[in-house]
Every structure is written in structure tokens, then in C-alpha cells.
Image (cartoon, rainbow, N blue to C red; front, side, top):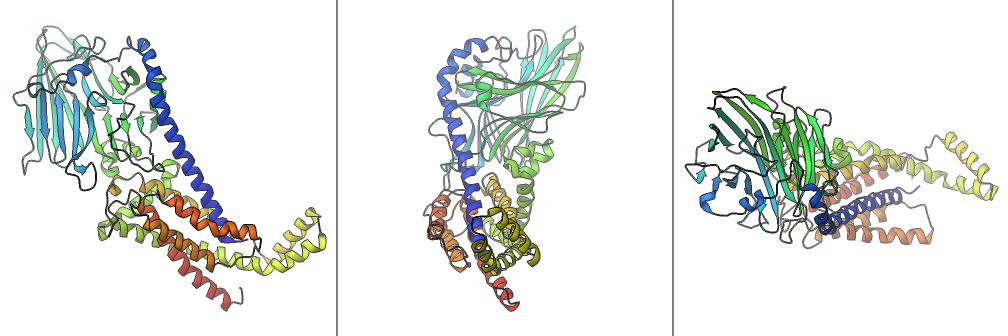
Length: 551
């Protein structure tokens, strides 16, 4: 059994699965665009929905300085509308749009072609908002520009609204230095002579069709999940596709704790439910509100505030990169928004090890090289067992061929004698294959890790590699990778003399080179180093086998 053949075939199969999944994602995204026209006919059914909220978009689109609040911190540049106090635009100052660009990445955006907003408020007849009637309050503020000064660790942005019944609503955004979480404090001062009932709500709105100029990874192999997600008391983490919302298969889940989110590659927006009061229950919902826009949000059960009393309600927003450590501290399972796929249980510890290495070398490329060597050293016993099994199988080839020649077409008898031969010689025919199968999940786990971790977005290595998360612009690394595969193939003993098989094997390095043209540079570096370590280990093992008379 030829190890190189098995390795290439298994990797070829796994790559086919990866590319198939990527094509499926592309197809689904195109399907969402095609449903834009169909969606207009469904809007009539959704206009009467409790959570429908079309009219406030017109208010948000007003870009007048007197009706917007601008906030600048060390990580944010925000545009908050005085209508509802909604965050209608957010720029991440530490994340440029492209490498070398002076423009920060726009995560939230409001324009004629694309809407991505975060809305929070207090619903009900006695609330500042009434989402049943699409009514939003007009807040007032003393300043329209707030900036976190040097040395300032906290910035508060208060806005107020006084209702006709004498209730004062103060909504305060609280920013902390270096943090992508925003605390929202609702203070309700009931100056009236009767008790009032309100419900807190939060929702994230987004257009499901991306504009042409929206930042997206050009690699067709790296389309991560884009859509909604949520967590409840009974469901730790669940993704929810835009297609399901567009088709009006909406969520309606009751929970006490949890969160709702909108996800894309590297970045997320999330609303964490207020869990300070176990008496409050929340309803998580989704809705197709028309105009190419969907929402995911929550609505709390009514809260009673007696006359001449006040009450504080808290909520938390995550707005920015998917930083797993900080997200895990903010809310249970929020770090699960980093999409590691079905091999998350391998990807997570690998990333922790990679991050530990980075803390010493301060270069993600060298960290990948070191973790590759560590993984290969750990896997060395498996590799050695693989080559030993292959060598023993080669020594049995003359006896196996003799059995076949002697028994002709009697396949049953051939199988029985071969099994007896394996038992006698204490050789496992699968010994050369199983170690390879065990190694493949590590390769795929690294693939998902390198394409999902924001820490590697635009992370430079050396020379011409300025972004380890994107493909090599000059395709040099894939060519080097293909060359290392070629050398492994040429230095590996081959038992099979079938010319068709040998021709196929000769083309495999070229085929894989083409595949890897679109893979992230970090993953290609991993595979190059892995192949180089394989060549070294191969020679060490072969010399050891020769000393023991096994060739």
C-alpha cells in the first residue's frame, strides 16, 4: 500500500468537500439575491407584524448634524441618530478597510443601498418607543460630538426624552477604553401619579443583499457564514440563515438569558440580554421587514414602574472583531460566533497554542511555522508507524503476488490466504492508512482556524506576504508547496507499477498547486513546512529501517 497515494487521495477528497461547501455558500448567497424580487410580494404579509419597523429607516437616513450624535473613542467612530438613539454607522478605527488604507472598516452602515444598524429602546404604551406603531422618540442632548480624550478610560453619552405623561427617559451609552462592548443604561424616572409598564427591546437590522463596494474576501474558498445567530437557556449556539428569515420562517423563542447576533467573517454585532432580573423573560425573534432588510432581536416581558419611582435597565452591545477571549467573558457562548465548523474542538486548542506562541515571537507567520513543527513532532510516532507498516507490506509483495498467481480468479480463497499471511507476519494492511486519516482533521481544523480568526486578518509575515488570511498575490507559496509535494513523491518508495496510476500521481502536485492558489497564505505556509518536516522525517525513518534490515 503506497502511503503517498493514500495521502493524496484523502486530501483530494477533503479538498473536494471544502470546495463543495464553498460553492454551496456561493449558491445560497446568489439565491438570497434572487429572492429580493420575490420578497416584495411577501412584504404585505409582514407589514402588520408586531416587530415591523420600516418607517424609522427614513428618519435614520437624515444626515443632519443637528439630528445625529458623533462619538469617537480609541476604537470607534460612531454615528448615533437622535431618533431612537440607534447606532446607524460604526467605523472600527483599528481595522483598515484594506492593507495600507487610511480608511477604517465600516461595520455598521446606513445608505440608500445598504442598511446595517443596531437599535435599542423601551417599548409599550408607556414606553419611549412604540414599535407596534413604528413610533420612535426624538432624544435631545447637550452635545452632538463626544470624544474620549487621552488618558480618559470611560466615556458616557447621555440622551434624554420627556414623554407627555411626565416620564423622563435617559439613555446613556457607556464606552470603555480598548473595549468593543458598549453598555447601554436606560434610566426611567416616573414622575406621574400612576404606575407604568414598559418592555425593553433590542434588534439588529441588516440588508441581506451586499452592495458591490462592500468589503468581501475575494477567495471563493473562504466564504464563512454570514447571517444571524442566537443563544438561549436551552440552545447554547445556533446559526440562522438569512434565507430562513426571508422565507418568513421566523424565530419566536422565550428565554431568560442569551444573546442575538449578526455574523460575518472576522466581525460580529451582538445584543446581550439583560440577565440581572430572573423575573424578566425575553422573546427572541426574527423578521423580514421588507426593502431587502431582515432583523433579529429580542423583546422583554413588561416591567412595572410605580408612580414617583425610577428604575435602571441595562443592556450590552458587542460591536467589532470576534475576539474570542473577550467575547467569552462578556456572555456565555458568545465566542462560539467564531465559525470553526464541525472541527471546533480541534481548532480552538490549536488557536490557543498559536496565540501563546505569538506572545513570544510577535509574528503570526513564524507562529504558524512553529506550531506546524510542534504538530509534526507530536505526530512523529504515527508517521513512523505508517512507514514501518508500508515497508513490511513491501516485503510481503512477492508472497502476495505468488498467492494471486497460484489461485487465479478465486477471490475468496485469495482473501483468506492473504489474511492468514498478515496474521503470520503480524502486519496490519491498514497500518499505513490510519495514521494519515488521523492527520487529516488537523489540516482541516487549521483551515477553518486560519480563515476565521480576526487576529490573522491583514497580519503580515515577511517579504511580499502582507496578509496571512488571503492568498499569495504572486502565487509563489503555492508553487513552493507543489514542489515539496513533488519531492516527497519522488523520494517515497512506490510499489504500484501501473502506468495509469503513476501518471495520475505525477499530476497530483500540479493539481494541488492549482487548488492552493486561492488558499490563505498562512495555510499554504503550514503545508510547506509540514512537507519539509515530512521529507526530513522520511529520511530519518528510512535510515532506521535499513539498519533493522527492513526496506
